[in-house]
Length: 197
Image 1 (tube, rainbow, N blue to C red):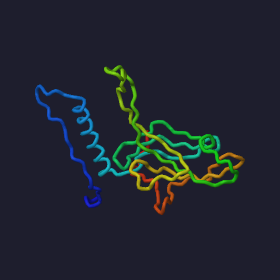
Image 2 (image 1 turned 90 degrees about the vertical axis):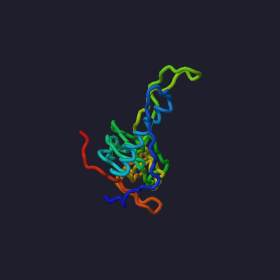
Image 3 (image 1 turned 135 degrees about the vertical axis):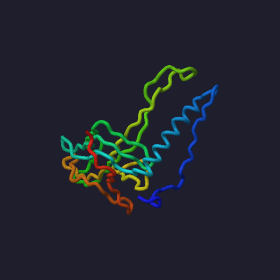
Image 4 (image 1 turned 180 degrees about the vertical axis):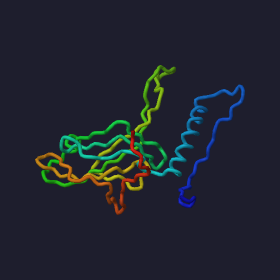
């Protein structure tokens, strides 16, 4: 890959703490310290490794009929964030999406995106009395009739599922790794070939 291929527009400036004896450290100083390293590795992920699936995240038919599964896996989004799905995701399309008209054919789109959740509440001074101690990084799978935005840097396309309803049950006709949305082709992009151990 040549440097001409890299998207270098809008590269961030990096600011880090300068430590000296007697410096009073505030919450902002520690946040700047974290952001310095987080932004550096996300920039490297984005410009060196790219966007897409590194390992796993296969979408397959599950049991019973009308169920899908997404295998554990790892991906990088368009912002260089690491998207880790550490447990298999299962979705019963009949519970979540039930079209009333028998025989209707529709497409579902499966995407994954980075998600942060504040966890581990602890006592804190002031009016709030509790505050979250940690931020858990993870993934959110979305299964929707609405196609994803092809220009999104937040979502990673996993699959298009063609469905048909029979006797008010959704049957999976086909699972594909590409789809045309608003004139643009969405494709499941794999940037690595390693299998999870």
